[in-house]
Image (cartoon, rainbow, N blue to C red):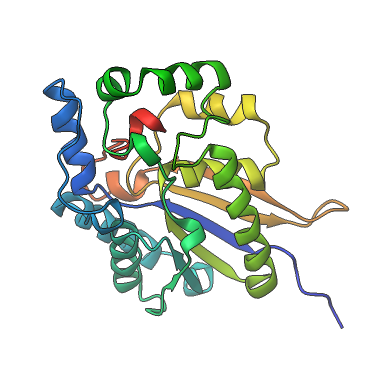
Length: 252
């Protein structure tokens, strides 16, 4: 009897489409405001109309793949913008509609820095700006929030679950920018310096695809990176590409 693989045969990680929070952040930054004007809880912020079209474009790209190359299982962050993206992708691509919601895929929690721009943090919590400078963004945890390390910890548990339940299957994850980066950190066994260098290279675009394929050529099975920040599914359909950080970018 062949042992089940500890990894999916293929893994896609997609950042949600543009949200109304992304749009609100841009307005706050343009107006040099301290706070980002969002009425809902962060978990309830929906996609913008453009974000919905971005999700459909990604879904049409998945639909263009051979049936035996499309995702078999879809997992999503519980945040509304991610759930909407997952459901729109699944609808366009004919994927299973029973999207599995997993709270470990949620956005990084920002605590007292929630909804603040860089200006807002410097004005209202200058001590946190200094702590972040001293500790670095990977280790800094704002009061009531999470560090990148905290996100990594919960995602390690998620990857164990995926290995247990979805080994040798094709899996799509829909989540958030920091989560995409932290999953890269885990899957590729990166260190702090390398993942922050990748982060500095540019934001993960809304709807961008990161793709891994199981590599069994060596003694130890691993997931090999095939694509990162892949936006051709949008460009091929003339869908505008946005790379707006989430509303809490200043605390990211």
